[in-house]
Length: 225
Ligand code: NI
Ligand code: MN
Image 1 (cartoon, rainbow, N blue to C red):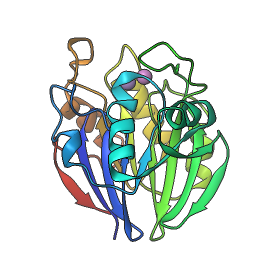
Image 2: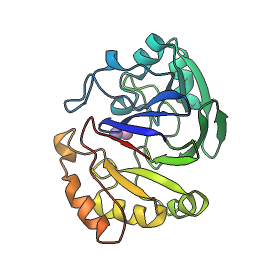
Image 3: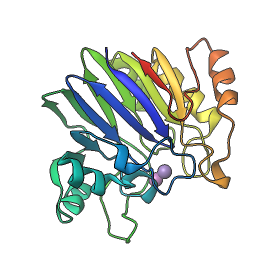
Image 4: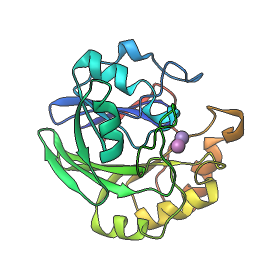
């Protein structure tokens, strides 16, 4: 059974398929992070886009752990130029890794590194390990293709941004859940900054009223799925 641990913002530790991976490890500069970058020990680092609150400590973690960075092509190249082992991918493409399958989805957002380098298109991840699919949307607005993602994948757990301003807010994340029909939905990308100081319980209440399973995973909290 794979295990998810929410590290805060959009960062997750995923343990399953005989390995550990971290997604969007924005930790040391995140005021609500559940841990620090030096405490992360993983084999893979998955990055949805280049923004500082997503690439975060990814390069440092990947180089220290000799982990491979999985990211959209331009972002993977950016990390490779900074010493990382990388596995570049792109939107619509999937690949069977030793731990399971990763497929990149669209995300309607931007992507540049903190130094201003263009890092291509942002993405979301469909990660299937031990027969269970986890959908991390990355930073995105609502898009109708989520209906297709929901139709073509049996999503056990989906994590969706609710913070508004930079991404979907609560109402759009509820609609996204209706499109995706996941077994469980968990809100992310809230509270970190003043401009996204949104209450996750409000999302859970709204989406539960539509008949979906939802829960707030506290920063540092884990669940098996
Ligand atoms: Ni972003
Ligand atoms: Mn973000």
